Each structure stands twice: as structure tokens, then as C-alpha cells.
Length: 450
Image (cartoon, rainbow, N blue to C red; front, side):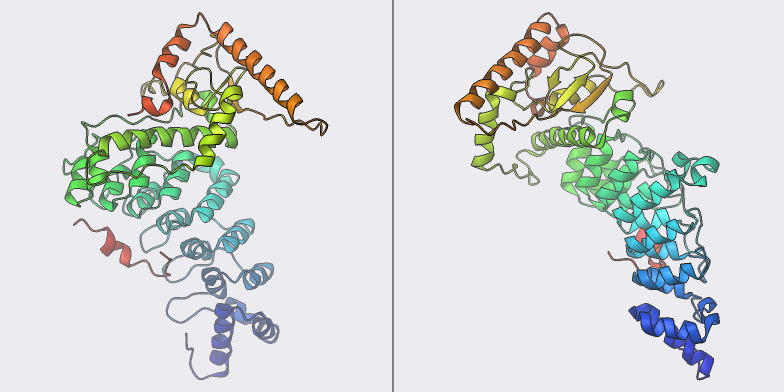
């Protein structure tokens, strides 16, 4: 960053160094004596003080610069904005501040034609990714461009943020993007092998977690790239045996998240988290069956003895009346019947989404046969009576549980859907289930087809 031997160059060098190291006192003194330094840039990369502050996470200096009316979308030599650098380096506070200042999320750089969303996904900074997506939803981008189009925005080589996250083994970013509407089966352009889907790229990277998420959101194991390869063949080529076993078209189909259902799209975060966990657990059970006896066997989940004791204690009072194995955690509205998350998801996943209509008929409650309008998490009522908490509480709980179980069983006695679900048993038996750098030139080397 040396700027020459002149007094001006010395001041510039001192300012850039103060910004990089977070020396706010020196920074403020230099700006007070030489206000024009705020608009100076480094000689080669043309980084402004705002770029340097964003890339190094110097939030106090960045705030001072923005308060001084500095353009939040100032460009460096590679046409990168401070927001891109903050997203690239995972500087969440700086990302938030720049978005508050009105930074444009639709700026493309000249390196790979990428936006801040691409960089957050590529480098795996999930908090920055969420912040950018939230800002795009409430900004003019959603109205002018459309939010769904923004989530699936392509870089100069035809890769969406989902493609980049899958290729770089970023499962959390993959999940966030899928949840926000990323197209799971969209092919790439010139990125990687042309025509690759996110599943091809995850198979190439060897990320089991990314593959699990993509399959759970309906990724097609039989879709081919322009070379005619399915993801299974890509995993075999790169010697990812466990990934290949899951992607083998002859293995059991995974359960797919029923996103077209209106009641699923309207789930609150708590209920959604419960059902997503149930889906992933079921698919992991399927994986165990697929990988059983191979060199890629998955370890069994570790349950402590204490956990098993807790399950047996609540089994008398709160067990699901369909599988009789899991605790009731989901309540059906408007009828009020309760089920475990596993059985609820089995009910919703009974029919796969129809690609032609992209919608499903709402499932019926297995107890009363009424249409399920909404799913909520069961509220646990606490007993605040501190007197005689031993025998009286036990008696009351048992009475409550028996009445609830009898209500569920009596109302659903003649229900064919209840009988069908009860014979299925537990849900587990149903599913057979980097730090960033300012320069991104290395992307081309990393992304070349091998």
C-alpha cells in the first residue's frame, strides 16, 4: 500500500494502515486534518478505506465512513463493493451496517460476475447469507427483480449461489438457500462440468450433508450433465464411496420435504425445525440400511441411559397414538389432535409433489378425517401449584393422558388413514433416510473440470 515519499502519500499510507488495524484514534485524527483522504484509494487494487474496513471487520471505522456520506457501493479495480468483501470474509456486523446504509445487493464484480450473495455462499458464511437474503426480501430488489430470481441469480459462468455452496461443501448455506426458494435441479452453464446440478457438484465435493439436504428437497438422482453423467457416476469418479452409495439409483428413495403443501409453507420456525429434524432422522435411518455392511457404515446415534429413562417415563402420558413410540410434539388445527413429528411428516409425505401442478391436496387428520389447516407445536402446560407436588400431580397427569389417548383413539377408530399409519410403525421404519480472500482468481483453477 506504499504511496510514495510525498507528504500526501505518507498520510494515505497512514490512513489505510490505521483502517486495516482498527486504530480509530489515528484514523479520526488523519480525517480531521485531511478530510479528502476519505475518498482516496490504494494504487493498484483501488481499495477505498471503506473496502479495507469491510474486509477487516472494522465496524467502528466503517460506521464513521458511512456517517461521513461515503458511497456504500464504491468499486475497486475488480468492480467489487465493500459489501462483497464483507460477505467474502464473513464480517457479519459490517454486512449488516452496509445493508442498513442501502448497499446494493445486485452489483456484479468483473472477476467471476458474482454478487455478494454468491460470495457469502461460496465461502460458507451463513449469517451473512441470511442477512443479504433478508435485506433483498424487504428492498426494491424484491419488487423490481423478484426475490425468487435473486435467490437463483447466476454468475458469469452460469453458477447460482446453491451451486457454489454445494461445490464448496457448505451444508448450512445449502439448506438456507433451499429454504428460500433455490431451484434444486437447475443446471450450471460453464461452471464445473456444463449442465451440472447442485447434486452433481456435491457429489464431486464429497459432502454427505449437502447431498442429504439436496435429496430431501427433491434433487433428481437421474438428472444428467452435458457429458451424460448422473451424480452417482460423478461420486464414483472422485472416489466418494458413501456419497455414491446414497446416490445409486437402485438404492431406496429418500423422503422429500413436502414444500408444495400450503400448511408446510406456513409453518412457524419452531414447528418447521421439528419436522425438518424428523425428516433428516428418517433419511439417516434409510442411509444406515443402504450403507450397512459396507466400509461406509454410519455410526449409530448415541443415546444415554438417562435419555431412555426419560422416554419411558413420558410414554405413559404423552406417547403418539399412531406409532406408540414417540412423544406428541405436533398439534393439528383446527381439530386439536396431537401426533409426533415423525408421524406428522409421514402423513404429509405420503404422496409426492406433482411437478405438473406443483401443489398437493391437504392431508386429512388420521383421527377425525378433517382437513389439516395448520400445524403447531404442542404447548406444554406447567403446573404452578407448589402444594403437594408428589402424589396429586401424578394422579392428575395420568388422568389427563388417559382422557387424551382415549379421545384420539375413539375419534379415529373408524379411520382408514389411522389404521394405515398405525401399521407403519415408527417413522424410522418408513424411510429406508475457508476463510475468504480479497482476490478470487483461484476460483477458476479450483472449478475446472478434472
